[in-house]
Length: 362
Image 1: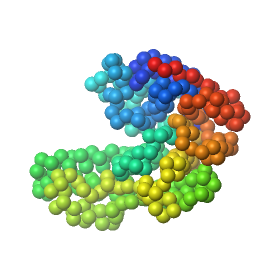
Image 2 (image 1 turned 90 degrees about the vertical axis):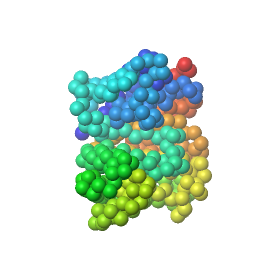
Image 3 (image 1 turned 45 degrees about the vertical axis):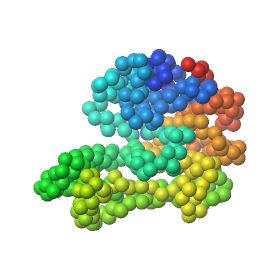
Image 4 (image 1 turned 135 degrees about the vertical axis):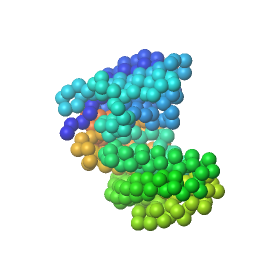
């Protein structure tokens, strides 16, 4: 299979853009401009086209320009030597629609994984400093891009979880017949999610360590591990044991929705003991491992989005990242930066002519 190459991007009322059209190189695209000019919004639009949602905003409505009623993102890709047109449209108060070559998807989930994408951004720091939800989202987003069955189980699990929590909040938790229906669904879907997460983490952990080693030249030893209280064999029993607590708390306190990832450096939590540079290096290693994982399973290279990637990294670590670009590890790349001369230097080191896009402050 061949890569998806984004040829052009047409934005209408998306975040800070009223109407803009961009065309891209199949290799390196450097988007340069001052802070606040809208560079990151271009990357978010590309991510949105690929995944069906914003990387930076929690609700779709927030992506609509503040004084407009709708927004539109359209991308023209080249895939298998054919032109593919992907369109996302959203009106206030309406459900968004995603179209592929004019045909509306019946389910948003059917689009996930079609165009694999990896983004590396300063906002990724939330994966380290915030709670477990951010790390579960990373876990689920990665697996979902290569395993549609996993995404289906995830959707069904959260649907049952929401219904069970509503029941608990409404004081109906003692209704065993109704509760058993939801419990059965949580155990079935949760057990499969647990097994798939466990297998993924076992495969993914050495990849993270390998990339961190390459970027830091072996300065520290890092690990990536799966933290869960779930046991597939005893899932149903453990869920029942948590019922008394669930009734008091009025929500489901046990299950895969409580899972977490643990990021360690030299056997200690990088959140507490890692410097800002070490944390950023870990996050880059994490995302490069994600890239390799998607590449291996898809058979072609994902689109790579680098948002202010060189901020707060020393020159040696930047050089090692560029080396990996030079080795042909990556396909189409989008880089945002505040320094045009740095973007040009990156292109020269790559040995190809990069597309430099200047964004003026609005």
